[in-house]
Length: 342
View 1 (cartoon, one colour):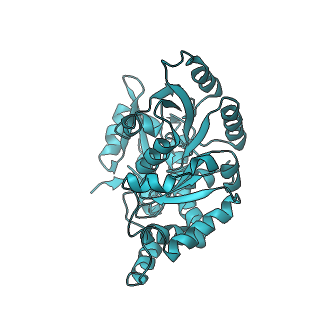
View 2 (cartoon, rainbow, N blue to C red):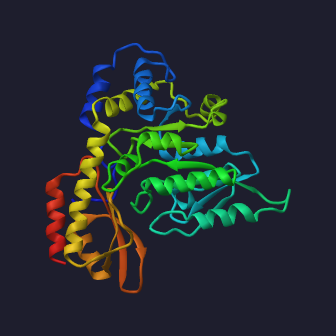
View 3 (spheres, helix red, strand yellow):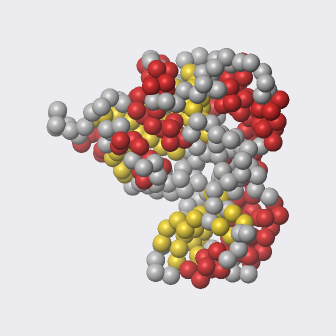
């Protein structure tokens, strides 16, 4: 059987989460997120945000989080600005478009959206009332190419959005890996201060499932619970989301798991650097995108499972190798030995 470096949700969940679920299994708790576990978990996250205006909502998945948040935040005639590598562009089956919202796709540099491109889109739709109104900027941190935004970049994005009457939203599927990456200078308080909304991913960081939508802008919170219920995302047994976030945040597990994944990815990246391999992007998180010859890709495919990411030219291809909270160092050793033999 091949060793998989294809995604960071191949494994089930961290044992402490499973144990906590088993220990609490026969407890009688309130439903629909009104249980004590959910209340405690939200309090821990709120303490990190240090923003009394922020409100937290637990849902089951990343696409669901994006669909719920953007669907509620936008009026029917409003649209989304994002860069070409974003998850919502072609990895969510048109979920955002299905709600009736146009997506304006801009170029990306190292997986990141650019200020000038946002301004160009936001200011060119002026044929009232015949055109959509750009209203929200969507970014990911970490990006789909594993890169991260700096605090200055986040501030610049937020201030531009404020100037242009745009909302700023962060997809945080791998937020844990971004916040624990080498070179990161963004804090939880920064996220609460310089975004209108974001979500905290747990599915890709040791949980069975679960994302925490955080709405910092009070105007976006009105009726959001109704929206969650109406879209079928309010779990009767919401306690199981609460338990997972409580376990992740009460003992620093959220950070420890991401640090492990990032460290294993760095070992892989260093091995490629030693071979003189170039990369599709700079990735201080748990995704690595080496550009290899097609022959080298075929050799690695004999022993390992990974995504073929992008054809660079006729003879070279970029692949994606990704590590997780559960990646075994000995499996990374095997991969590194294979890289040395390329």
